[in-house]
Image 1 (tube, one colour):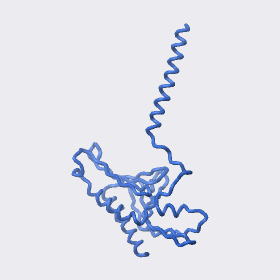
Image 2: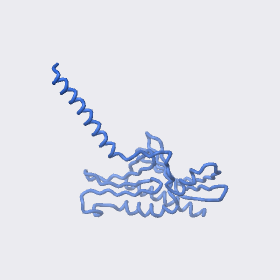
Image 3: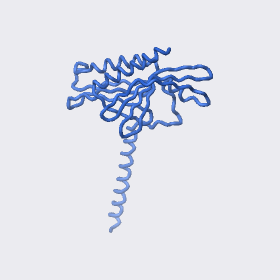
Image 4: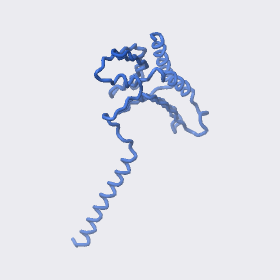
Length: 198
């Protein structure tokens, strides 16, 4: 092999390596940064109290109901966490998303957020083509505790409803609009249970 061919081949290999590294860097820039456990900051009052250390915590739960879906289930509970030392008390709703093939994820929603979530669900369930003048739409609502509800009208014209939860690992379940209405009812029932014990 001649010297010029060897040099050309070496330059081609270097250019190929450099190009793939640059492409990889561009792809990495598009991905969100990973969440670091060491720098985790509590998302809401329930989360903050639940993560206290060297403290006696009293946790109470009332099971409200489970919504069985095609690909898993969603459990709703009225939740109370109390610090036994200083009588700090926080209430809310725990929503556990349990897909069939992966681990379950629990989202905590503070009492003060429940009404906003219920109103958002009421608005989202009514979504139709009149919500925007464009052909497709996407509606999202996310609580501070990382519970998210999405309704998407796809290119095919079908409407997809999904719920998602989790902070480090997101878990998603798909629902029908009727199942979303039932989930809304369970969340409202959990709030009523909390109102009874105030």
